[in-house]
Length: 425
Image (cartoon, rainbow, N blue to C red; front, side, top):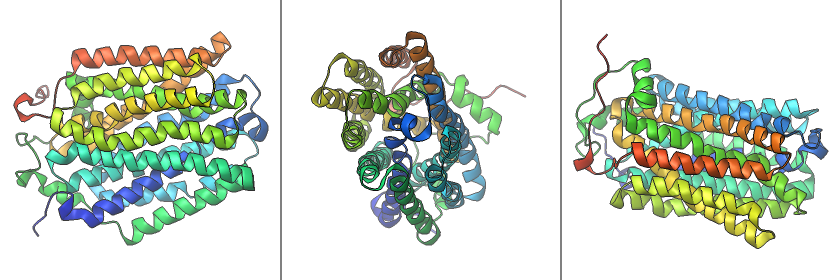
């Protein structure tokens, strides 16, 4: 059977995958506003327990990072669609756990399941769309993927804020979560197609790759190559890890910081939503822009712009200031987020691209856990939330410098250099 590549040639499945990632974003977004803001009053977390507050994001980061790696390898063996469905099945207990939670430990366990869900489902939506499309569309594809996901995340934060005020936090989250997870599972069973056959034919299609035919690699070889052996990929992995410090800060401390300054749950949802909406919407431009101008400069400057937005938030007061700093952080994230993944996809051959993306996403989402630990320690030692903002801003500055020094442009064919050969056995 002849496989056609490109967005237009596979528009129906492409749109279904975009809807899937919108629902994936909503699944994580329902945990991003109400749960941290009401950790003390609703779930019994003592005031000032910074390390306990960060426990659920630490758990999420380590689980999601591991599942990203597992998803990439598993998808090359059993297919993308089965991994996607497995991810949604793992999410089914989450609304009930939040609704009936007797302590913060229930929330941590629910977040562990959310990490499994996100690692499997988000990885598969991105990988499937890359299977279906051409090499010259990768920036646009990942930009659209992340746009849909983070618009879903932001919309869920706003929606759950209002639902929590009208129905109560537990009932609001339970109804919203059940609807999202149920719809996503139904679509993955009835409508989503398996895209692994496109990946297996990609090396035969002249428009899908600019790289020489790849050699078969073991899991260990691929992990080593992506993580440290190829300096370009190592630079991208460390940048992905550090940029998740920002998302951990937004998840754990932004709602608490704003709640302590008198904002309502709906107001917090809108400020945090500005970050998510800006991030999501701007990726429509930045992903496509990288297909024309290249990835490297957008990635490097994105790290610095995002770090600046984080640093500015505690320096002023009022909804307008907080929203502006959130928008700046979201703009920086939009510059780097799709294009770090696109750069990995540029370098990795089709035969192990899913694994390479999974390993990059392993390191990237490990940043949730490492970043949350850093946030908790910096806030605990200083006794203030503001120290966590400074920790993240400095980390983004230094990581951007390392990316600038080690990285290079990956998009243009004339700049391509194949990865170093693995050592002889």
